Each structure stands twice: as structure tokens, then as C-alpha cells.
Image (cartoon, rainbow, N blue to C red; front, side, top):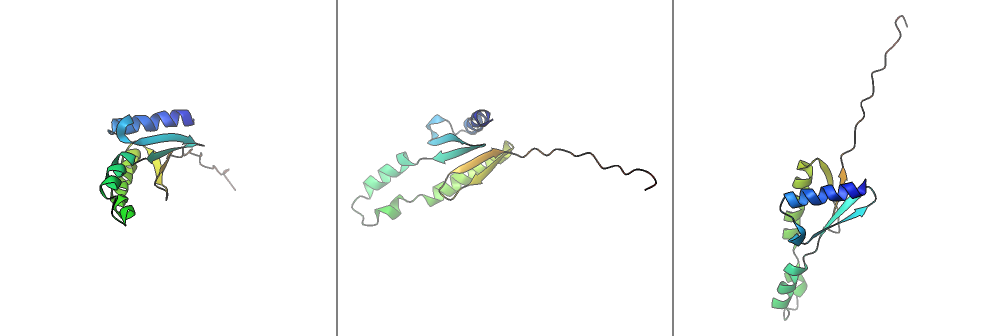
Length: 112
């Protein structure tokens, strides 16, 4: 199942414009796929530009960008019928929607 889900998640991402060069990675974790973003290409120039700043860490924080990306990815996955869950460390756990099985109504015997 997870191989198919990884492929589905990668296809959904590519269709939404998040191809291989987007910095997003996917990996299987049990019945889920973990989607992560590695902002190295964005952060390295920022750190280099602020290297003399004693608060360089604050200059390299990208909370707003990560929040915007999480919101966009959540919308993309929901639109595709998948179930995304943003995790505290910044990744998104994606699963398939639970399948609901219709149970037949219980028929009561007449006269009881």
C-alpha cells in the first residue's frame, strides 16, 4: 500500500507544481507518507548575508514561509482526497481517507 501511496503523493505534488526541484521529499512511514521540505537553498544565502549579525539564527528563521507551504500542501492533499496532518517538526504526514463500509440495516423479525 505505501508504495502506491508514495507514488500518488508524488503525482499530486508534481501536478500542483511541486516537482523534484521544489525541495520537497517523500518517504514511506508505515501506512503514511511523510512529506518534508528542506529549505537549504533558501537559508544558506540568508546566513551568508547575515554572518556578522550576532542574531543570525533569527535572520534564518522561515516560519512564515513554512506556514504558507504547509497551508498550500494541506489544500493540495485535501483536494486530492488525501488526509494531511502537519507535524510539529515541520513535516506533513499524509494518509488515505478511511474507507467507510456501509453496514446493512438490522431487520427485526415481525411480531417481536
